[in-house]
Each structure stands twice: as C-alpha cells, then as structure tokens.
Amino acid sequence: MRRVPILRLTPPRGFEGRLAKSAKKSRLELLDGRSNFGLEYGIHDRQWKQLLRGEDAMCWGMRSRRRGLQTVACAGSLPALMLLIVPAARADGPVKEISPIPAARPATPPANQVAAMNRPVPAAAAPAAKAAAAADSPAALIQQLGDDRFEVREEASRRLSQMGIEIQPALDGALHNPDLEVRVRARRILDTVLKADLEKRLNAFAEDVNDAKHLDLPGWSRYRQVIGSSGTARKLFVEMQRAEPNLFRALEDGPAATATALDCSVAQSVIRMQSRARFPNGYMLPLGSITAMLFVGSDNQVLMADNTATQVAYLTNQPAIQQAVTSGSQIAVIKKILGAWIARDASANVLAQNLSIAMRFDLKEGVHTAANALKQGNQPAYIKQMALAMIGRLGDKTNLPSVEASLGDTELCGQMNMNNQLYQTQVRDVALAVAIHLEGQEPKNFGFDRLDMSNGLPYYNPGMIGFRNADERDASARKWADWVAKHHPKSAASTTAKKS
Image (cartoon, helix red, strand yellow):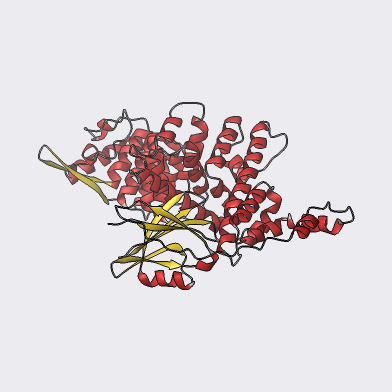
C-alpha cells in the first residue's frame, strides 16, 4: 500500500469530512460536528467524478451495495466546499499531490474604504438599530439555521436555545421548513426549550407541597383522582414526569397521540433491556419510567396493541418496582398505580398477566378484575381458574355469587399424573374449593384431601384440586350441597331452582 492524500471538507450543512482517493477506490469519512460520530463509506469512481465535476455528491449516510463497493446517496455541491490537503500516513511511499479546488476569497478593500468603515456610527443611524433588532428576532434566527456558514448556524442555535418557551410556535413552524438543516436544528432546539421549561415547572410543582398555588402538569388531574395527591404521591409524579416527559406531553394531544408515545417509550425500554452490548449486566429501568408507563397505560381511552400491553405488564418484573412495592414509603402509591393498571380492559393474555401481578403483590383490585372476567363467561379455562384463585386469595363472602356461578362449568383446566393416578381439574372443581374456603371451611373435609390452603389456592397445580374420577367429584359436590342446605337454606333453595 502507499500513502494517499486526504482532502478535508467543510460542507455548508455542518459536517466535517475527509475524502481519500486511492488507485482502487475512494473513501469518504463523515464526522458529525454535533456528536463527533464518525462513519466511513466507500465511494465508487462515478461518484468521485461527480465530485470533481462539481455535481451534487455530498454524502448524508444513505447506503446501498453496488459492484462490491458501498455507494451513498448524495446532496450538496463540491464547489461550495472549502478543501484543504492533509497528508495521511497509510503506508510507505510518497504522498501524491492533489491540487485543491480554489475557494473564492473576497478582495481586500482599499485603505480609504477601511478608514470609512472604522469611523464611528452617528447617533442618527436609528434604522440600523431597528434592523439589528429585527435580525435578533426568533424568525430571523431560525432563517440563519440554514445559513451556508457553519459559525452562523451554530450562533443562531445557541441564541435560540437560550430563549424561553415563547418561541415554541416559531420552532413548531420551523419543523416544516423545506431545508433539512433547519428542521433538524429546530427539533433539537425545541427539545432543549421544552426540557428547560418543564424543569422549571417541575421545580415549582415540587415546592408547592400543599397545592396552595394549584399548579397543573400534564396528567396531574387524572393522577390526583386515581392515585391521590399526598406528598409521597406528588413526589413520585414529579419523578415520573422527569423520566418520561414526552409521554406526559402527549397526553395534551389526546388518546391517539398518547398511545403512539406509549408505544415508543415501551419499545425504547425493551431495546435498552435487551442491549447486552451496551449494558452487559442488564439495563435496570428507573422507577419513574416504569410507573409512568403503567399509569398512562391504565387509561382505557389509550388503546394499546396486545404486544405493547404485554411488555408494559412485563415491566413489573424490574427490580426497581419490586423493591418499591415491598419496602419504603411509596408502597401504597405504587400499589394504587398497579391496581389502576390491572383494572383496565385487557385481552386474555394480558388479563392472565394482570391477575398474576395482583396475586404476586396482593392487590385487592385484582378481585374486581377477576369477578368481571368470570361474569363475561367467554374466557378460556385457564383465565377462569386464575380468576377463581384470585378471589380465593383476596376475596371474601361478598364474592360468593361470582364463584357459585362457575359450579356447573365442566371445562377442563388441566391434569396431572401422581403415583400412577391421573387427576383432572375442571373449572367447577376450582370454584367449589374457593367457595368452601370463602365460607371459612376446610376443603379437606369435602374431598380435597391434597389441598393445602394455608398459602392461598395453588392454582398452578391441578393435582392438588382435581379428582381421579366422576364419583369422587360428585361425592364432594353432594357434601357441599348438604352443608349449604343446613347453614344457608335460602341459598340452597335458590341454587336448586336455578338448576331445575
């Protein structure tokens, strides 16, 4: 290999680039001045010739494969670039000289013109001051974001970033500017301005502990109604806002925009958790992000795909929320957020997750969710089993009507082979065990010899609840019917009337 020259380019759109030409192929390395991120692209001879002819050939990062070399989509014109030759030590050998394209330079003004320019400006030049003020307006600065000079663009960006939230309408309009550079910079400036304004509002909100000033933030009205406005709840709300500002900002644009923002937040969180390259030990989501997605997603007006809802429910396995819901001062608030989440309408798969969450964290809201699932009647057997188990764990006698409605359901929940004996569990078997438990009786006295209710109903183990044959099942049902007839004659008569 031999040493090749490198051309350093300063494009009119804020990039620094290096263009290397060798005998076999060319290399263009773009350095983004905003992030110092370098990319290398191979350039085919045809693109190289376009550069030399002054045609559009500035690379913006779109790649495709062609004849074994990487080609790029191009924009920008070479004569508009300032070229300097910088030798690069690639290997032994002489450096091949390439003459740069001369850049146009302004002529040096005569001495008398210089003297005239250095004279003090008279006070009567008020129109010039007005023109300068107009040049400092947001509209003028936004136009400068597309200036050919990098320094002008940077200065305009800096000055706009220091302005307040008042320039948001102007920046919103700049997002539709035909110039890509203006749109990109306007988006970044808008994010900076919104972040600064939100931080100012959050600080004021956090200081107003007693809500004396009645300050408002996106989502606060519903949060106060569903979760509460205690000091702990208020502190967590501020944490949620800081963790997911875009998600709460979308609340002001309606349920559809909120659903889209929630999809983005969930997707970004999943990518971080699965990125072993960036986080070898796994990415731990902060509590503010998890509770923000759970709270926003708990609104039935925010329509989510099953995949998104499943991933939101999966976030409850993160260490941050598991620790917060078991210890510390936020337990009650976290449980309210989880309760609001599991109370939302959900498909069978998400409902199963929600019932599991309710039992794992002992959420009383899960009883209402379970009763609604049983009332629907069209749920699969495993959902009915989980719903009955939920009522058996945290319900009481007031939930008996929901349980007794399933005493005639013969749908199979599962089966298990124990000691060469096949035990089958039907929905009615689970309902019977739960009804016995809610009445304060011991299931073992009614034919459930293997069932231990000391730690709740073990619904994951059909062999603990099921029967080997129909005779055992019928005997257990008759025993319970006799007990009900003796202790609740009105209820027994009503049940008999329904069966007939």
